Amino acid sequence: MIERIVILTLVRGGVYAVLASGMTFIFGVGGMLNLAYTAFVMLTGYGMYYFTKELGWGNIPSIGVSVVGVVLLSVLIYRFFIDKVRQHGEVILLMTVGFAMIFQEAILVIFGSYYRSTTYLVPGATKILGVSVPNQYLLILGVTVALFVILRLVLTKTKVGIALGATASDAEVATLVGINVARTMQLSMGIAACMAAVAGVLVSSIWTISPFMWVDPLGTILVIIILGGLGSIKGSLIGAFIVALVEVATQLMVPAGVYLSTPFVMIILIIVLVVRPGGLFGLVFEEERL
Amino acid sequence: MIKRLLKDFRWDVLPFPGRVLAFVFFAALFVLPLFVDKTFVLLTIIFSNIFVIFAVSWDVLSGYTGMLNFGHALFFGVGAYGSALLYKHLGWQPWATIPVGVVAATLTGLLTCIPALRLRGPYLSLFTLSFPLVLYGLIRAFPEFTGGGPGIWGLPRVSGSPIGEYYIILIIMTVSVLIMWKLTQFENRNVRTGIIFEAIRGDEITARASGINTITYKLVAFAVGGLFAGLAGALYAHAMTLASPGSLSLTLSFQVVVWAVFGGMATIYGSVAGVYALYPLMQILRPLAQYRLLILFVGLVFVLIYMPEGFAVWIRNKIERECPRCKLNNAAWRKECRACGVSLRG
Image (cartoon, rainbow over all chains, first blue to last red; front, side, top):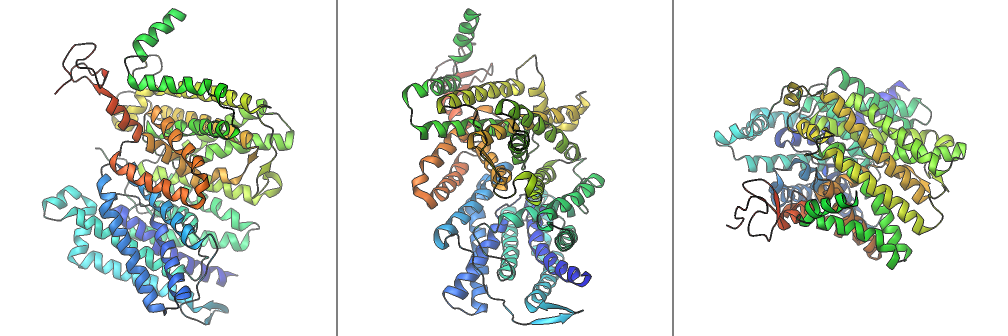
């Protein structure tokens, strides 16, 4: 039992961590909440399904085309739509919801509301501590770790990463020292979409692919990023594993746990927020004045 | 009394094209059943009216105070389930269940507010977003008591005939919107909530420094929002004769934000116009089946780019113009201000 909980927590937490860190990243840099974020996961899932199942491509070209397509799409959306309403925070939110719904409806029109699935990227299973773990799960964990290392290196070592950090802490001063803020925001949108797309590739074979698959993870991810603190990648990493642990433990140990996992997660969230209103690693808005 | 009303109408409604439009609109709603008796039209307007209460309550809670609530479906769902459970387990009739549902939703509003008081900005929005999901989980976890996935069927209607139902809901809607409008009116001298909500949105610390107990007023905002959203939920349950977990979905929480922001936030008329523009359109586009939401949301995105303040505000700015000297609103086609005579051209 314990082993199963640990393994499942690691896998689920890994997926959540990739998703949540992308979302918190775009919030940290651009100060915007992109609610179409999980819709990108859905689009990638459908891309994987379409290329591998309907066109019969191999895994590598399918992954490449899906990821690049989704990233391009997100950058275009930012460039032509969201950039124009940057002054109105609530309009950005509404617009991203609008895009999520557009994707959902477009997918419904093209593919119908059937549930789809793809095959595991890597076949077989490994026995760890007596639990048979599909290799796909190990791949997910590996990719999560690699992605975090790369993101960390890019953010701290490269010029682009430092520009991103500067924009995040003060966009006006960043403009003063010669950073093109609009382009940096576009880049951060692209990076976030890339993380969503990678997560989409990973989960396309373990989640059911449907036009509505973006709704449930969205709620979970939003909980994770406020638990960890908005804008903090470290926070979202830890938050992801906390939430995954609570979910897996409730689902395996409590009767009717599938439905009760959200209330349990919420109890944790309420406790954390009552003690620390800014999340585990977030900024506290108490002193902020405009 | 009648003379006073006529005087008000002459001086407070007629000079403002926006208010004339609103007046004509409500008058039209009241006489409509005399000319049209198609069930489709009546039902569409009944549901539009219910959603108007819902959207305006969101606007009062979130638009005016700036505390964006993304889980407004919680209050709607509590109202709907509150009245449905009373009917299912105790067999009460609508005139008894709806008030109790409303009280339950108001209390829920106050309860949600307590953890939410510590949070602000996006933390608050995302925190409130997850509340309906909790209730959804609880409803699915105890199906014997709550009806589980399919919900509770066969609730009684508020009135036997569609026309009766139409008028009952229309009157409730008009009264609710009037109350909420008065509560949030900036110039209102008797109830100060409007100006205080505005102060909280603008700068909470300054508001507190000026001697306003902001906590009380935030509680008031949540209670009012919960009250009217619960009323909408209870009415919806009885109009649909069904309370289902769908009334707690993320989609509904977002839907209300879409209506309010589409029409224009922090303006009561914006939410009314938003619902009346979008909900009937959805019903009319029904024959297009799977394309209708696609068309609707593509349209929405483009409207948002060109009118980011909301389309009702955009229209109002076209037909009304503020006098640069005395800040009084004038019809856009007047050459000079009706109060101070300053030229409005150029």
